Image (cartoon, rainbow, N blue to C red; front, side, top):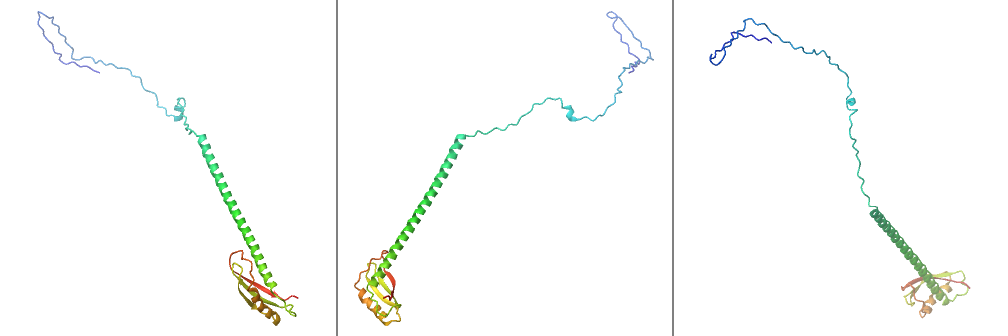
Length: 208
């Protein structure tokens, strides 16, 4: 940096109080330079491949553990629910078993009643045929012939009708079948176990 002074002014002061001083600067003043040695930056930028992970390899970080909060299980309540379900299932099974047992008993009773009723009806029909045969007199020389008849009775065993459905080839047997109706009018037959009127077919077979 250079400083140049041109025509430096002088200042006059009062003589009684101050000393007069006059400074005259030459016109051609030497150039004063001050140079400050600055360090030359001769460092070259070095480009290197830097791994970002290496920069933070030595940095300590706190590990955060993600833990799931376990829900508290009320084992007693679960046991109570399981017990109720088990009891309900058991009751349901018992109920179904009871229903099946009742149905089996009803079916068994029904079959027994049907069997018993069938036996009574068969016995009833057998008695009617036996009574009709008691009033049937087999004519001579009519062996091997038969007459088909039907007898109708009310629930109390009184005869309401007796008819010949088909005659035989033997006239004597046919005449005997016609006479049976008069004989059976006064006969009281057994009561029908079903409490209803009956219609029974009786085949009169000639046997000597």
